Length: 261
Length: 297
Image (cartoon, rainbow over all chains, first blue to last red; front, side, top):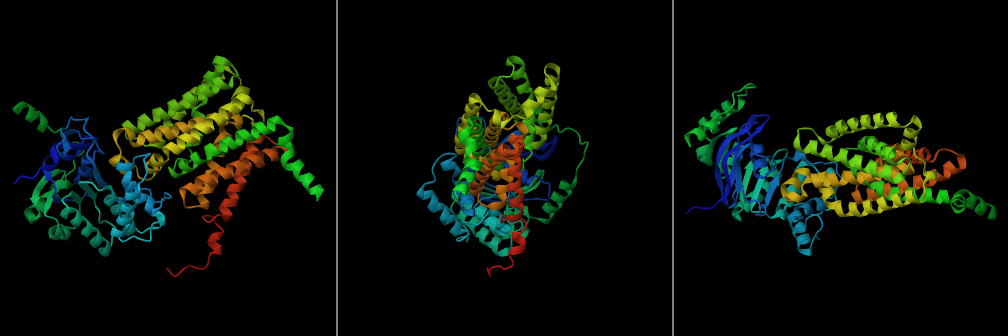
């Protein structure tokens, strides 16, 4: 049985000031798969999630979601649940926990629509699911980083998307919280949603994530976790990621492909 | 007792009852307090407290051109100011969107160029007196057309802020999340640009009432104080408007009785409220010494 691809990468290249953060990435995340993206610091893991969420434009290639062709602009954007690293959010903003979770309704309510009774129930239910009932009226700024991460997971629950991208969901979170959040991720997987998570904990990946993608700006390995997380692959990833050449030559893979075509 | 009532009437109400220019000044200041102070709260939340100052300089070339074309015409100068301010905000927005520069850096660069252009225009075609008049307008000199301008801007800006509220809050709080969920027509820069346009028209409305620099004061000082009082955004917005309105009314009365310039007196009152807030507000200094008990959980 061939499952349809949820996300298809085709020759995806993203660079910052002409130095690639992701280099000629191709392949696909199957619908309903649960994939861990691993690799050393600076290996392009966050960049990969951002380019799937269309937050950074690719230099070359595409990251297509679902059946959408790259050039079909008229088709509405597929909805994505994207969890950024916590550092990108303004914790000093006067925002109630309940209101922050309610922002998950944006796709349904937008800038002007009403938050319906059903949405309100969904928000209360999501807060209950992450164990934060009673925190509704607290301010975001008064929460610990673990509690804040629970709030953001509640927002993802409210978003209710088929594709969920998580950027280091367990950083700065204690073991009890990460166990609770992991249970939610496994539940999403069980419900048939496609989940891609950037992680640093190899043991956690081995025990819970069926698929893995090992990045070092280029793709090192992608497939079943047991085949990806080998000593040889990890050593290769480390040596590749540390190479940084300020005056590196211009990459000619595409020129070569053009000649061969 | 009747002496007290008479004294109170003479001090608080008679200036407004007796003089039309005082009534116009009061209405203009209250209208600005309603619309400008909430914008100031959003500016502080976006860590752009000094943007008002930058934009108040950025409108200068437009005001100067308006003056050169039609003389001391409020409509022409206001129109030119709005146009220049929007141009500067728009160009800064474009720079932010398409280069690596952040919002504050691109605005700083664009407004400095605009300020230089404005000063050049004014010194080439006017006198020092004109420049001073434009920068330090007088609340007591507001005429009917000025009043209509301020009232119109305040009405538009209140309605527009209400319409943009949810998008603006999300764009200020978590722009990355907004970018990941919003349709392309509602991306962050739409809210940001709309908000900057509101700031521009409020500043231009304020320059005739209070003078450009004083208009910034009425926008920012109550907003900064209000943030010390509440940890809910809605309460901060209302508090800022109330403080601005109070400063406006008290400032006008003080300037009437003590014969001081109206704009600076109003801002002085807002400053006094700011220092009081620094001391007594829940987020201020003294409550830290008073609260010695804490709850068990």
